[in-house]
Image (cartoon, rainbow, N blue to C red; front, top):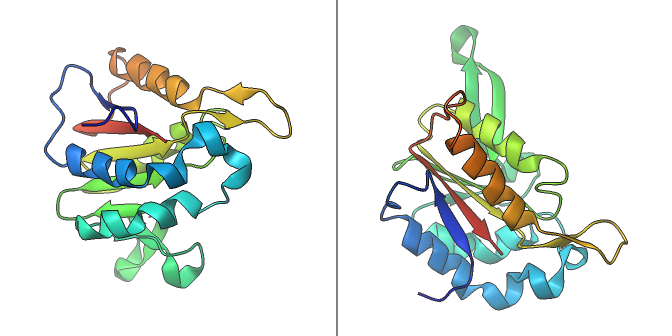
Length: 180
């Protein structure tokens, strides 16, 4: 397999499940369009990367969010109230409900704005999600600065810390972090 995109499966002592390779191939097949090390976040608008990888994920059996407009979102009820009405609903970028795989694709501020933290918490509250895959830029530019943020590396450090710390136990069988 190509070294691109970089990816890591957590916990690091676990063998990645069989669904990981095909998902990584979706990103690898789209690499020239989504490579954050050459395009940087100024070229990416919300949904841009998701739209590029959507056909590949759909071919693997994922439902993929079409847009942020109400008709195109993937609502996942978290709390159910009277008459089965959803009290709290979170939205995912893609979901394989059969295998319990949630996918979130972040564009720029994945570590700067604690978006990966939010993804971990929200996905952990969605019933029947067994795995989480988070795609984040390898690096991104912060604002108009020429300075780049090593987003993928910081995401790896965060997940290594969480899975290496006994006090915090995530409800997932595993988390896949993909750099693009």
